[in-house]
Picture 1: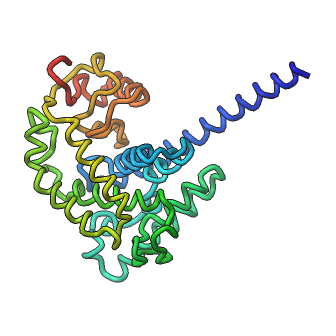
Picture 2: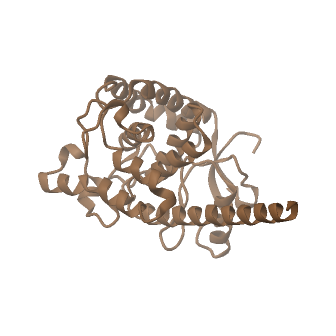
Picture 3: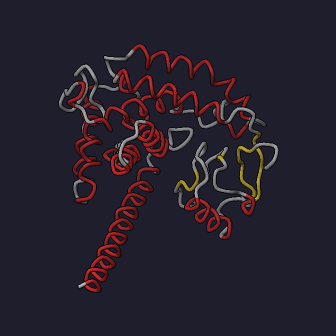
Length: 296
């Protein structure tokens, strides 16, 4: 009986691992598809929203399952925009005409339908569906309010707004681009006024668009994230010396246009493997722009 139980546990563990890998592969595939729609940002919008939403969830001491769900929903919150016209991708809502706005509002429904095709992503799909609901009930698609809106959707609404306001641009030679600086302090100084104005707006929209407690938490997180890179230098570092924990000062793409490394993103082992493949096939340079301290 004991041997049978152990064998059963091993089978379940193996199946669980296979399922987890299957979910991960599905998410990565969807993410790559979404990256191709984000040419109007200084960096990857979906990756940023996923990462910061996950950090918010972690600061709230949520369960590992909830953190994963919220982070994944942040990563895929705009998946319903795949195939949209450019006007629906780069125009702010305030500049859309009625036809464009009608199409834009569909992306939360399309996103939910796409994600519902994978049973393990149903919770993610429901968060994606609600991420444009406002705290006072003026959002869409169902005009939910306050705690009627899923926590993950309330988090993503804030992070999504912040990144759109801070990093969406139609200028591809943006002068405040961190990759054009010799140190991070210059970049922070040039963008400080914009950063402050955005945080002031977030604060002014507490109890209107955004959950007041989550606004307070996000402002602390955003300020902390900026403070982390104070004093860092922008250096060209050979791929062999790039280590997990470093920060990319520029974005790197494969020859087919897929985003491999995202500016501002912390280096992870998976990213390093993809970078090595691209370097070996001469798709990206051997020396990469990184934020590093004097010891690196």
